[in-house]
Image (cartoon, rainbow over all chains, first blue to last red):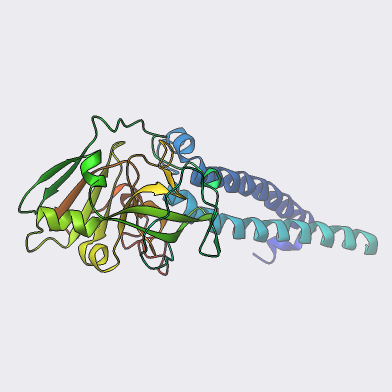
Length: 87
Length: 204
């Protein structure tokens, strides 16, 4: 695994994936948020997958995942920029 | 109601036709500040045709008119409603004690659960011991005003110290049951059947 990561461009690519993952998680955070307060819309819209209780459970977890993914995305991007000034 | 309360002791309610915003030195929330979070929106109930059915494990099943329910002794208390969504509202509730209605029906042995049925199909349950010991009210007024359709006219359970989903609105049935595993509408969806504000929101 570490050999695979020796290619710096791969690390940069992973950083971009974390960016897209952050975006997806932000959308999920918004959806689960609406799932709590607008359950009459979101519950049928998601075929019952995001009921009020499920939305409320997920809402807390997803928020933490957003922060983690965003931190990795920004962290890798900053590392790439810092590396670019040194190489 | 998809949304526990800290309550004050029972007292006689002040009469009035304007919304009370302060009671015995305590600031009250505005009724209009309470979000509508019901499973099927506000229900229109006519006091003329309304009947409160008391059924299940009771000696004498009852079917009470709106006026007959109002015929029980009135009590009031300030209780804060806490919704699982995060908001809360401190309201002066006026109603009749559920235990007085149950006493009239005669609760038979082996009925530890009180199931509340609402006009819109919503249900939730409370322990009989809690309903009796805590003088739980079936409210018909909030902040001195008769409940509106949005607020749960004709009656709403004031389940103090329980999350809001235990505060059933538009109550049209009270059923005494032996089924301790009974789960109401939101409890079936994953919210804690206990409903204690001091406990976890979700079932373990």
